[in-house]
Length: 453
Image (cartoon, rainbow, N blue to C red; front, side):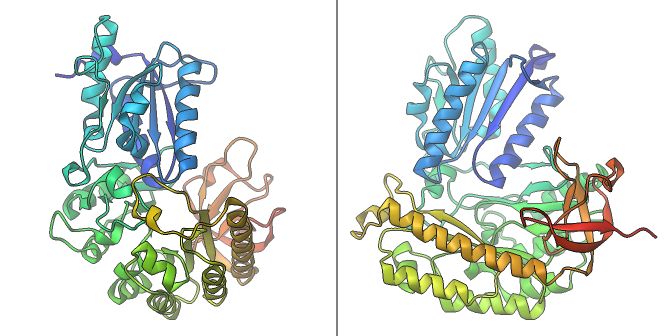
């Protein structure tokens, strides 16, 4: 039995690293605590509870996680500190040995975060040993043993909601630790996800982003199909927009593309991980497609939705990426009709099969290659934006952070800003018709003018 009265009036601090899925889960944890009477700590206030949701996609991410843990422990020395997420699953003992950390929860255990927190909190308040006879970590499951699915649908500080539809991955790419951190693919039922979407509509939400680790693999645990989930969500009244956060190219089929092209609410916006434009490197990565298939998927999207925004993940400097392989990748991407490249350098992860590949790219070369691809990405994004200058578009606006211009996004994910003199508080979470003007000062958005009447 959870004693919620013990949490009344307490304050919590949250810190999240990594992907949209992590931010969605943290927001859900925050809402659960809020329902128990816990408020978010204000600037300069001391927290009673600290929750750190970690990432472990790269060595840099691990380092940032450790820094964040040490920083929050220093800032809130009397708080009950909980660490969860991918890094917590992969390095529970190491994290539990950091002074000030009270509880480490792995992928199975975070679904019962409130129960573990309540038990640990009560023990600490009574001056007793930490949870589990002094062992402060609960993160020892192997990939096949991670079976729980923690539902998450939350807005956080944004206008858009993030709906977790799937977790885990069965792919075991040679460079990746995600299956070990999050377990194998599993998902919620279509009916439960539709109910969550209806709840968003009831709260006034207009846009939902579908999140997960390998979303296209939806249905492994319920024997359902991703396309059927998409069709069911499209029928939820009140939700005006859906976006799909990321889809593996081998799971992005023509049926889904055609449905999105003609659907009521699914936007012409795709994010597809490529990782490399070299077939030789793709084979070393154990990816399940080649660049010919990837190019065909891009063509299919553009034929069905000529103005679609297509984002692409690219990994730079992986083991085995010789100079010739990189040039092959660069030229392949240069010829693709895509909008933006998400470029990140390869980071060696302990225990991965990629460490057996002999060719190693040094750090300086990785930076040079990353710079070339980032420059290419800017060229493509600016060209895509420029095609829409002078046109009218529907924009969903978001409340602007203090000192920032109010902004929103078109259906095809063009960022639009309003001059401060034209922005109004009532525009937040509103779909408005806008005339798209020229670029803003740093060319990260188009300036917009709301069309009244």
